[in-house]
Image 1: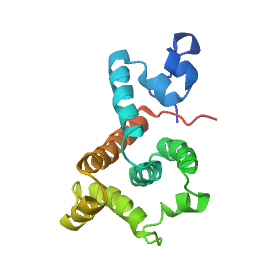
Image 2: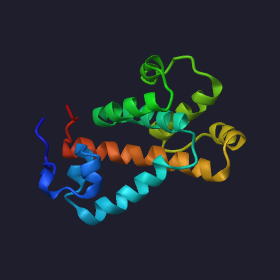
Image 3: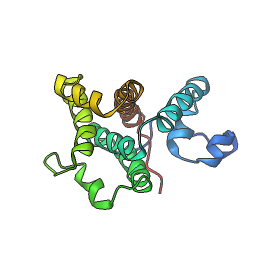
Length: 162
């Protein structure tokens, strides 16, 4: 599919885009003030309190639910860097895969938010047992953010890099 919004040409890239020449950044950069605010927010989520493995599991499950090929492609790479095996990354697409209880909880959060737009009391109680308050807020915001981002990328038809 042809992008609905073309990425900025290289001569218009800011320093961040020059260091990270991904279509997500060069496309969203067409709205400079929103792009800069989004970078700060997205950066806070990527550099937050959650363990990288948990963060990437939640993002990958959200990318799967949202049908975001772009986010899946990018975060499969980041998931490997966070310690997920190629097999585990593929398991994210299988609702009945057998996961350790800690991983299952992260995936359940993404599932609950996708299907119900809320967490069950049981999922929330399990989160309270595992994470502090800040990390619970962060996990919910992470899943919500990547659901929103998947919608934006799909609608703008941001292409996956070669």
